[in-house]
Structures are given as C-alpha cells and as structure tokens.
Length: 239
Image (cartoon, rainbow, N blue to C red; front, side, top):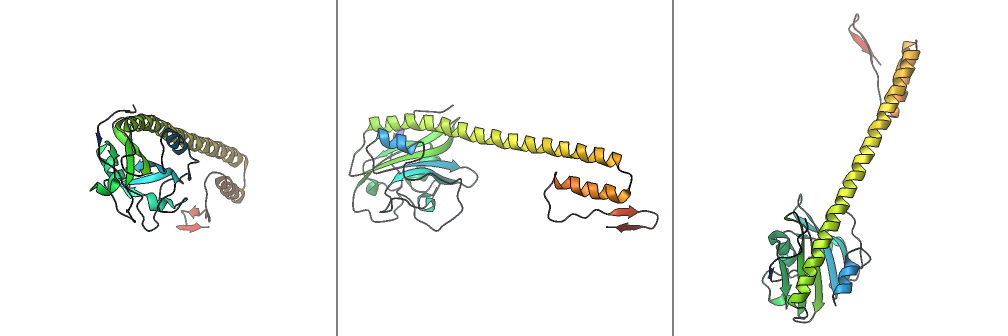
C-alpha cells in the first residue's frame, strides 16, 4: 500500500552533474511526462523532478523532469542522476522521510554542483509503497522559505499516489513481458509439432535433417546451425 504521510525534516540536492553513465528507462523531459505536469500544477516551482529508485544499482534515476537546471532547460538525465544516500534527494530515498528546505545553501546534506549565490527552497518526498521507497518527487523554487508545511503535506499525498501509479506501471510491464514469453513458447511448441509431423511423413534421412534445420529456424534464433549424423559402427560423426 502507498503511504501518504510521514515525518518532515530537512532538504534535498540540486541536480548532480557528472559523466555520462548507464541509466534506467528513457525519461520524459520538460514537464511533458505524467507526474511532472501535475506537480508543477500544484506548486509554484522553477523545477520539478520525479525519480525512480533503482534498488539493484543504488541510484535515483530521473524518469520525468521539467524546468531549467543550472541554466539548461533540457538537461541530460545523467546530470540529474544521484546515488541513494548522496545529496538531499539521495538522503530522502535512503531515509524514507519527506523534507522541506527553506534555503538549500544552509543544509549540510546538499550536493553542491554549481553556483549557489541565490537561495533556493525545496520540497522533497519519497514515493513509498509497502514500506519500500520506489521513487522521489522534488520541487524547487528560487528564493528563501517559499514553501510551507502544508505544501510539504500536499507533496507527501501526491507522492503516495505516484508510488501506487509507478508500481501499477511496473506490474503492467511485467505482465506484458510474461505474455510475450508465453506467446513465444506457444509458437515454438506449434513449430515443433509441425516439424514432428513432417519428420514422421519423411522417408529420406537427408530430407529429414534438412527439415529439422528448417523447423528449428522458426523456433530459435541462430547465426549458424550444424546437424551431425552419428555413425556408431564407424565411431564417427558426419555434418
């Protein structure tokens, strides 16, 4: 079950700039993705981000974002990706705690990646489902103390619904993958039955081997296929 409440604390990081690296699924950008548009509709913000927490890699992967980050309106996902536990986004993912930051410059957990002459207010909430942090939602606005505790409570509620939606989407992907695998298995079984019927009707051993090769082409993918005949009397095998 998605949790829509939780304690409040301190803040979250600015986007982490770093070298290109492997990511999760392709993110949606510039507020066009489901989630970011809704978040920016709820809050007066300069930026909004939705992260998926990848438990296998220990990374917070940006899956949707909108706004201008360090002067860039359409940044690479690598710029926004952060490890769990690092910076304020990573801290929220690691501690499952929503935070409100009046000025990111004063929070010791911040990840400094660029100029920070201006104060920046932040709201960060974990997307928690069944006591597992599935993602993080981040909202930022230039200026000090631009958000209230009521704003943080609203973001917590949104994050709870977003967690449920993310889990549902992941479940749908798994179901589709399982359906594709089942359809492939059924097609392979039908192909094997066709091959078996053909073999039973064939009398020439060479023709049988050729039909086996033709039948396998529809069952498995391969670049090269060699079928050997074993002559046990002579102790040899022949391609």
